Length: 116
Image (cartoon, rainbow, N blue to C red):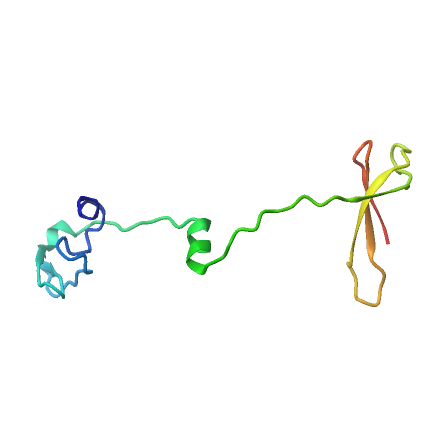
């Protein structure tokens, strides 16, 4: 209860219901009719922080751990250092009736190049 007294000034200290402000002099609990002086509420600011974890929990989304992808290796000569081994992956970059683009990364120097 002490936690709510310090932070949640817009809630009833007895039952926890949100207070209404029926008069410029007091705030009132609609459930138990407890009154609080409006001076206790005036000029107070409400702020809170929502984390990505809070959103995932509220929506019921589970975190799936990312798995490292083992890239395939191919005998492809690097344009920069001349090494003959590179890893590659393909991606459809244009329309479906066009071929895929192949992206290469040299296993020695890390140079990246592509082939359409």
